[in-house]
Length: 428
Image (cartoon, rainbow, N blue to C red; front, side, top):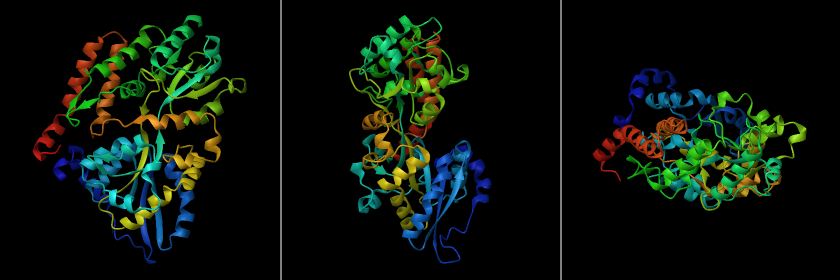
């Protein structure tokens, strides 16, 4: 199905030849070699787990290649074009639909069903769902990421509230009360305009999907998305949030400490950053909380990375054993201690430092209510348009109706090739 390749892949085909290897999967000592590509910090620290695996899996050797996140996507496409993909790879959840469309990944349903280690029911449902495309499983979650509230509980208490918000109505009341007693140059919440995630969170809390008809068309004019966008824009127009980007805020942690804002929607990596960067006198003044929804507890983003096996791998059995090892709850707890990444299995949260961390508890709660972004290869491009149109709306250049219509138009243009391909294939 190489007719699915974008033009970039065709241009990279010659470069991809540089990645060609013998691909036999066996080294000179007769060991089965599993080539594993991992990104960023995870690629650095996963090597600490290899000795135990190799000791307990005689005859298998793991060879790790670390990729920087900034170059990983292009390098994977180049490797695919040159028939030089690894055996196992870490893939961001939103990349999986793209590589499924390229027919690059091996289905994993049968292997997982036969596994005594990987228990589908132990995984957070929304995270597991990110790996299923058109009813087929293509990845096993490795670590999870989501967004929720970091807040100044002392400032919330000063405004008259003893607990974080549980609905949009309560959140509105808190945002208004905090701003009313704050100095003119201080705000209730920070929602950087160069981030699409806060608006995406509000949109995922709606009943309607962001794309319709199997991902063929945008669905941004739906009542649910319009309600989410209305609330998002209201936060700025009421003066509860400054219309700034991250680049306009010199230091998020110091500004949070001095009370420039009281709420911040961010991810688990900031637990460690807040512990390190906030001054000692502020360490008891902040906490995390699950996101409120329109009428109660709200959903958030199902993010993170998963482990996949490429279809061209000649050592799929050994590759599956490596994935099984990394999926064990005790190994996931060790991986969390090495990286701070959150494990995707409930059993991994049951004991150890993670279970005792008060700031992680809200993430454990939130992970029961996460939803995947639309599972189409074009989603990251659409998300960028979401950010651009939302920023224009915040600045008053577009009304809610105009913004929703503009987003549908932009999404429909991006999805044009998808519609054409699906019409040719007769796919659902």
